[in-house]
Amino acid sequence: MRVLIVGSGLAGLECALTAHELGHDVTILTKGQLADSATAWAQGGVAVALGPDDSPALHAADTMRASANLAVPSAVDVLVSDGPDIVRELTERGAHFDRASDGELARGREAAHSVARVIHAGGDATGREIERALIAAIRSTTVTVVEHTALLDLILHDGRVTGVTTLSDAGEAGRWSADAVVLATGGAGMLYPFTTNPAVATGDGLAAALRAGAATSDLEFVQFHPTALAGAAGALISEAVRGDGAVLRNAAGERFMLTVHPDAELAPRDVVARAVARQMAADRAPAWLDATALRPAPDNAAYLAERFPTIDRLCRANGIDWSRAWVPVTPAAHYIMGGVDTDSDGRTTLPGLWAVGEVARTGVHGANRLASNSLLEAAVFARRAARSLDIPAPSGRSLRGTHHTPEPAGARTWRREDLQNIMWHAAGLERSEDGLREADAQIAHWAEQTFTPSTVHELEDRNLLDVARAVVRAALGRRESVGAHYRVDDEAARTDANRRPEAHHV
Image (cartoon, rainbow, N blue to C red):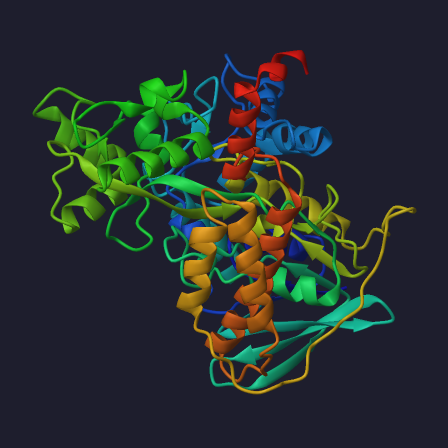
């Protein structure tokens, strides 16, 4: 069976390896080089129930609670149950995870986890180590790898996906046929001017799926990481730092999270991110991450360099000795919880099309992703997708798909930066009906200025516009605040209702 996998992060590589082992003829298409993906940027670890104080049931409970109970329980059960086995497989594929002094996998705790269950590699280089191992494994196989080839659109024949069209860095069009197409194209962090994502995260697979008519869900749920290094594009300060005891302070030096949530710095990400943003607005300055007391001086510098080598180099490259000084931090777009609807085997609503990794909406994240569940999700569902490629879809699944590519209608008047600014202010950490409607009208106007992309950058802009429109409309459709989707007008409505005398009788 000819299998075409678009994307080369953890999800794409794991799917390719498993499909190859099952005897399929596998080709990977990737927009940049094979190693260009968000996986390598993942400082956090893999959440998995391995310790004697943990269990898949407890991991599932934490996942559901973080999701605002909007995650799909059956999908969460798959995620946490398959977790231990997928970690063993990644180890067998050559990934070296950090070990404790007793030789067992070292486990750390991150926000909204009830126990320490997050395993790491190289301290804060987990994604990079997993990617290294999987790329080495891919290089030892006959899997075909085609680099510098961007996804243009899905090819549909009689309602079934039969391949893709592509655009090369040189502007050359391509056409690829396959028995099965797997989207592993990652997220869309470049929708926003401040993001922890790499530049390749432009929603390419999601946009192509939207244009082809695939069902999508939960696009309003965009997770913002609370602690990106202020002034350094894409520079993440991992949640594991707070898990080790670092605290957030305002301009006066006060720990402001103590009055926001019982779990303080280890509250769910949406809570911490909004609190940081509000504190920044009040102070008119960045918030501060204080890791100066994780170990007694002078041992703290050595500890931070060993435990968080990537972050240590990052801070010092920006002139910060974080063993003695606070780090300026700001929220940044991090992860999109929604995506292309799939079942527990990665099948979408379009026959012939699977989706894995961040581009997929498996149902395990709900309104707010639990820290370090993303690498786990990518590996677990990628393997399941590969194992289902030649298995007929269950009867009764809803199938649809009408492909539409607009005709060119002249030059456009907008730039990517214009779109990003609108998304940050209207569909960022806090949203309102008025702001979202204004953004929807402006994006709709820009969408009328259709154009045929002749470069990969133009293609990315078209994809970002398509995804932005879907995100904004999903946000308009959900009027209540829940998880990462925070409607300030909903908050105002609750406040007004509580002030009315009759509110207590409702």
